Image 1: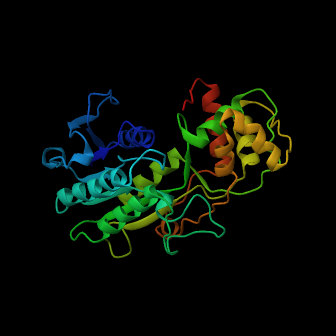
Image 2 (image 1 turned 180 degrees about the vertical axis):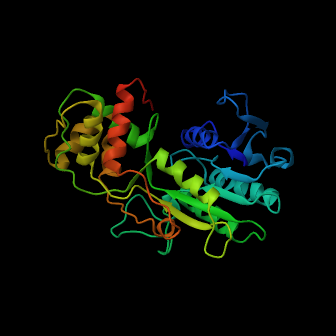
Length: 315
């Protein structure tokens, strides 16, 4: 297939590019500048996706679209209208340009389209979405807009917290702490979270590209993507350090003391997020026949081994 990929230079986009090229697909990256791309990747200049670009040339001869560009996280200083423009309106602008031209349209959404940063119950796609910030609301609005476009088979991928080489944010901060040769006071943290490796996200996208539903039509609608088992912070660190060739090196510290210790180095928010429960089940992908390749523990061990072998994790 020839696949138009937006966001090809981002964290998930780079892994998607490698996975798709590795499977023999032709990747055409929609870019706004001349950043370096992987070898054998076509380049289509489209400018700012929030500026309603003309997609006709980029879509010429394309079999499928993977839309991974957008504002990637909730954060201070980003106006509500910017989320609406980039994550919602720009997605639908591309989708309307692609309708009738491509066989499949895959939108990289987020679990935040369904929920806030934590949940007291296990979530599936059948639960009513309740996003709690502009980022999640803009992703959900794009999903719902895609579902209303005739002559377009659109699947929306909702990954949970993603880990992998070069990941940023809270997960990147935890990985950097795990690499330090010191005891870490996370032994008492028991809240469980569903995680997903960036490699598994790429596997799920490829599965959605290649498979149909029981009616023989392309898979569409929302799909939660996660590793098969949730983990807590202590298990995350233990698995990473096993891959790094280190002992777990965990001690237990009461949460208030831990929060006070992390605040001076700007990691209290990381603690709050990673120690908040958020567990999901990938019901629709399971029903479609998709089988995750590894657990979070094994994925984190592999990531640790990759970092030892020379990979770098930076924020």
